[in-house]
Image (cartoon, rainbow, N blue to C red; front, side, top):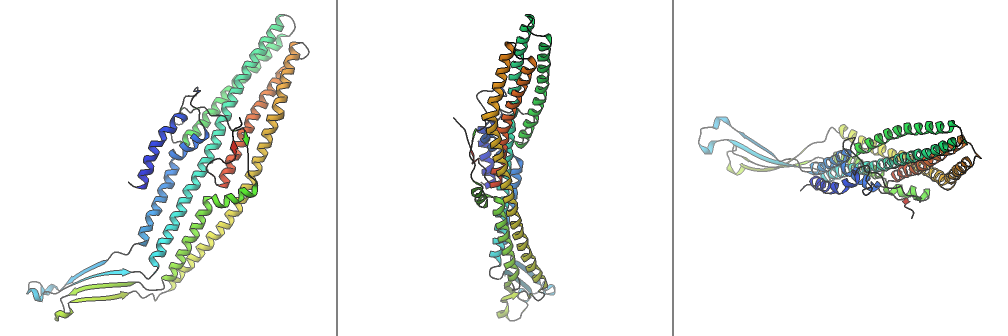
Length: 425
């Protein structure tokens, strides 16, 4: 069984184990989608992985092709005028030959093809990391949109309570009819926001299902809560980890090795290839001369083309080495920017969770108490309610943003699995 068939069988066996957690109904309370489930499913189902895998398998198949001997040559010729004569006078010539490349050429061809296959494999690994990061980001979006819809529904219920209070106070002459109308208008605005949120939810589901290579309207299970406790290593550690983990750096190293093998091969081309020959020639009258053995070789007299091939290989080495220098500079920038954005998101999240959200809740409670005791206006109550809803949304958005930034940072470092989150008790 080929490697590809084994991998396909593995995917067919594993995908059904992941699918139930993905495609549970929206109202399910038992099967919830986790980021690990989503990442695993995307890496199993996304067609781009198969494209990269096929490219790697193709490059691997080239190794044997480049290191193989050339096919033996067989030739046959005869003297037509001897046809019909005695068998002993029939003239024919048979020859078989095998070309043997100069020592080291086959090995260098094999090394170059092997390094190119390694580079293709690292390209596939890089794609996996990017798809994993995209999946984590979309999971954060999926979590946020569910929280936003839930906050919207809870605030609609809260407005119904406020309207009931306003109607009760109006019936006793303690409030104006305008208070109840204001509650009706705010409730209608929230209903409109529900439509907007549902459309955004559908768009996020479409993006996720596209990664999973299924129908855009395929139902998707609701998400588990995002981790609440965030830990991020220092920037120096992340930079060092990236130098070891990023597949692009490994691919560039393999490309440099392949170009160096090509450079050495270009030097070997100045030397001739040997051809061993054996044959039978009945054209000779002397039977002792019928069987022959020999040797031949090409004459590399026109060396300009070999010099050009050597210069090409040296230029390729220089090109890839400078690509590595540029990638390292871009990598350091990418990690630094992702690190700064992550820390900013963590700071904003803590600000919302520890200060703004409790203050907004206390303000709403005070406004509701003041209104019921006729110390505050209904407009002040509505403003406090809207402010509390906005702070709730911003808090959940800050949490989702933090996980988006973490996914970007993990991708920049070259990690497929999360390294920086844990769930608080």
